[in-house]
Amino acid sequence: MGKIQLRQVRKSFGDVHVIPGIDLDIEDGEFVVFVGPSGCGKSTLLRLIAGLEDTTSGVIEIDGNDATHLPPAKRGLAMVFQSYALYPHMTVRKNIAFPLKMAGMSPEEQEKRVERAAKVLNLTNYLDRRPGQLSGGQRQRVAIGRAIVREPAAFLFDEPLSNLDAALRVGMRQEISELHQSLKTTMIYVTHDQVEAMTMADKIVVLNAGNIEQVGSPLTLYHTPKNIFVAGFIGSPRMNLIEGPEAAKHNAHTIGIRPEHIGVGDGPWEGVVGLSEHLGSDSFIKVDVPGLGVINVRAAGELNVHHGDRIKLAPTGKIHRFDDKGLAL
Amino acid sequence: MSTQSTRMAARFMVAPSVIVLFIWMIVPLAMTAYFSFRLYRLLSPDRTGWVGFNNYVWFFNSPDFWLALTNTLLLVGGVLVITVVLGILIALLLDQPVKGQGVLRILVIAPFFVMPPVAASIWENLFMHPQNGLFAAIARGFGAQPILFLENYPMPSVIGIVAWEWLPFATLIFVTALQSLSSEQLEAAEMDGASAFNRFRYIILPHLTRAITVVILIQTIFLLGIFGEIFTTTQGGPGSASTTLPYMIFKQAIVAKDIGRAAAGGIIAVILANIVAYFLMRGIGRHLDA
Image (cartoon, rainbow over all chains, first blue to last red; front, top):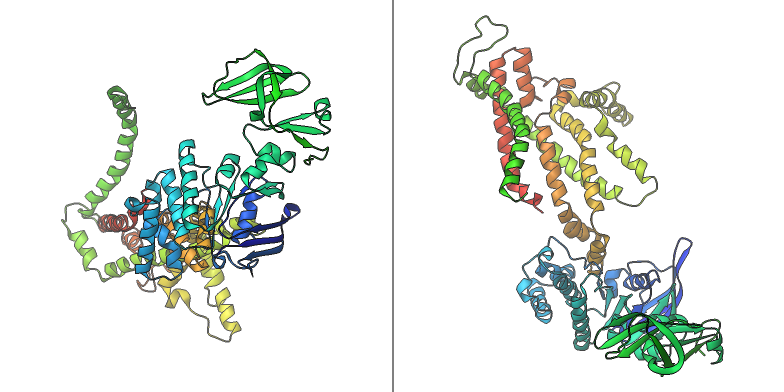
């Protein structure tokens, strides 16, 4: 079981109110991603749930029990840190067995669980090495192994992939997703990378300046962002946000159009191509349209336009409308 | 620095300093070794001639020698144990975030800047003195007899004084080592259910092994030669109760004016230091590798 509820959770460091008050329900077995720009309080929120920081006020419930003042070890949660936080003087085996040893488990049971975790994570051949002798991806797996042997109510991940190179990151992303499929344990995952959030989450929590901007499934956030912040944060490249007369035509203060929802060829807007990136599968181009500003366009496949070309654009998909407070209409 | 010519050039360049260092080391050692086999008494007219191993034999037959040897090892061992244990405990306290941390650290380090004879003098006259000392005053406050530290417990007193001087050094090294411990490791251990004691036992202490090794090795080098504190306080007494090997050599050289015997003692001290160094490096030297 791993149902976590936050009720009016607040956190201040002196006069700085990092988290002014958050309500959030995390259901058992869910993969929840906290996403937001750096400094938005997502790591602090995770540390509050873990018990590594004290809440200023509010209640944290785990499986219906008030856990607000429980020490971290008593909450039944396991955490994977950004730096992995492996114990450098212990072998991989001892690292993974450490929580079991602290729980006073018999050596035979420890050994059995370590072997099982090592098999799941492909670490069997590395059990007698030290963390210093492992690659980044292997260290990451050891950190995950140390978390899963305890069979916790929920896993907490604090930007676990940010120290890995791009290729490894994609691989580990899939491994963590698969791990979630097989364990069916609640996972809370903090990241600033919206691609990680979109690909892994059952539910994304978008945070900005300590507040929850929106909670929803990845596609809900993509299709119906509640406000400009979410609209701009989710999706890559960023949504085009247009103000002024063009927005007024749609009865809105601001309109937003995703780069993939703009067609090239014929249309009402005309501009000069600035930067163009051709990836083969996609083409990303920036077009300077007078009166609208720079418009990002994403076209599938190859598009034969280059720097300085004059092209015409037309919106082809959904136009998101926002009022003067930035809320969706 | 990989081609043959650059390596040759490098050897050429360092050669002068290596040669100077070698001479610096070998000349005094050779002279000591030379004198240790000579009859060389400053107060005696017949100060020439080889005496074989007589000077050494005198040392080994002297009952004071074995006492001095034991005292030397006792002093080194005692001070090491006190400074390492207390040093770690104080370092743990100093690593806590408190107001006035900077001032506190300077206060803790202060004893290290006091010169050994001064430190010993302060301890002898202000703390351990049977009439004027602080400890005597405390004892009288409880209606007890003042303890005669330097008369009845000369070795423990000297160990206490030297430990007081070296505690700041150990503490300083341990504080620096503690600061390099990542807080995420401690938090991970906390999440893993480790109690405060277990976090110390399994995370902090292993992290400190290299610092402990450094403290032990450096202190041993200096503690083997401790002289000023003994000279200022007990003068090696009462009797020979607090005579160490360096003090015994001093007595032969300056009091008895027997350079030959003192040189033999010096060579014995060098051998002793090498034996200690050998066992230390075998025992804990591996912690120095990265």
